[in-house]
Image (cartoon, rainbow, N blue to C red; front, side, top):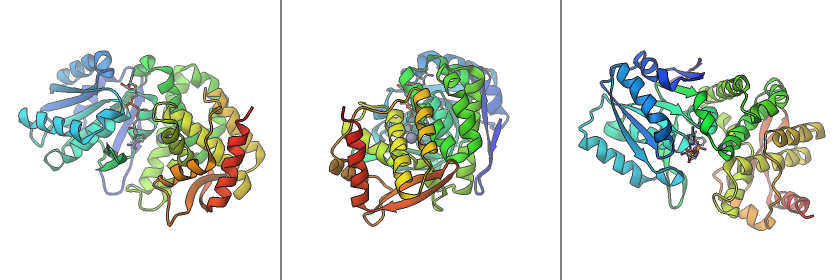
Length: 364
Ligand code: NAD
Ligand code: ZN
């Protein structure tokens, strides 16, 4: 049980443990007195965990309703949000409804956005079921939907009343989704500290095997890391939160250039972390042993270097579509050491030179 403290919002608990969905109702009852809970889930997660979640809510005295949305990024849209608003109004749900997100980051971002906006905001709880949503998206209060023009362009901050991460739900998670979470855990460890990094390096194979104790500890460490970052910079106004973008500048460009879905978000971010380390070695003196230690960590987590590359110029353009661009110069989160990062503005020529070296390293 980890407490997240945010200056202007009520603090809330993140619970991590086995079989928590079965106890969900009681946990939420401790902090919420609504009559009605509306569970929002997706087509994959619903058949697996909705029954247990609703049974537990009913046992705690809630009237439990549910809405199932299609699985996948496409559900994070204004159209789907609008269907949920309409369904909530048809059900005559008032301001006292509790919205419960049961699913991965897509369901969490969508349901959080709906909860933040329906009747100017109703209570919201997160029950993340992917490793990525447990370690990353369910903590921090960012919610939103995508537009055709880009991802996460509409949204708001909405803190949940509780996050309930049941590690038992991870048993059914496909391998590709698993490694997505592992990439974010590795990102957190590199940014956080030697202590987290070396623990993860020692535990990487056990994490890849989904060893229960190691999984719970990796989630807890990542949540503490993210909660601390978010507590310092709730609305991303102070720059502290920028560190969460480590590996994501090239990562997002790879996802866009290769075509969304060609590589998972985790595969793309892991590649971005490898690139950022090499940029760090050239620009801020990151030691070679740190660069290689991260390579080995990612290998052991099941995130090998990609054999894919693209023309440096097109990668540069794709990176410039990234929101961290200020005045045309690219900004990268670079680790000087494990646990010591900085944001560095790098001119196009230098970036192109390193992208060239990156592309050449992929040639056999
Ligand atoms: P996702 O929600 O699409 O889930 C991945 C897939 O796994 C889906 O097909 C889903 O149906 C399935 N699934 C979920 N739980 C399962 C389980 N226990 N067993 C079997 N299948 C299961 O993807 P995600 O990776 O969890 O989240 C990605 C989204 O999170 C993106 O939209 C991203 O923008 C967002 N995100 C938000 C934040 C934030 O701060 N709010 C941070 C990072 C990412
Ligand atoms: Zn990410």
